[in-house]
Image 1 (cartoon, rainbow, N blue to C red):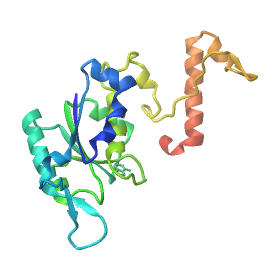
Image 2: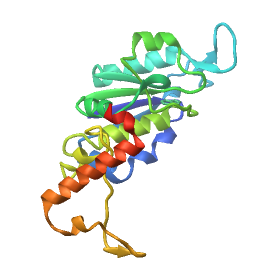
Image 3: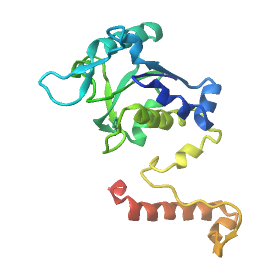
Image 4: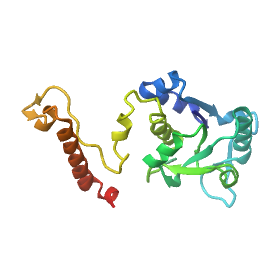
Length: 225
Ligand code: ADE
């Protein structure tokens, strides 16, 4: 899978994909991530990509031409994108099921907004999905893009070593994950639940299921509706 990102501050996207699972996904050739500076398609030599908004009001708007030229050029190079995603607080809330669906695509472009956002006509003409990572406003879309790419990248088939481990993540079955324990068996007088030491996979599974249900009931009852 290939993910291109268009950003006014692509430097923000360097580190998140250089470690751990995202690094491994790229090393295995399962994921290719490229962040492009929108300034490459600026309208003048001053690197301008934004302008005042029609109708007045505070805040600049990212202009049509740099974005349209960037998208056209990238599509010419890489073929038509399966999805062109704009990350924005007024988008649809990004959830695990969106990550699952996106993980099966071949190539995606993510557009990061800044300032007041991007000219509506780019959204109308090019964008196929608008996603928000939560009900709060970030100073730009880059961290939201990083969150989405991480959530998608880790579940691309072949990325996780233990193929079953993504299946037991929180949200995969609308349940939060149960508590987990490692050595030592006793820490500051607190013992690991005895059932986990029985070596009986049926009992362990039943306990985990029950704990997952209990956690979901108390913390996220909305998931059970
Ligand atoms: N850009 C700024 N805030 C955002 C959010 N909450 N989700 C996605 N993109 C954003």
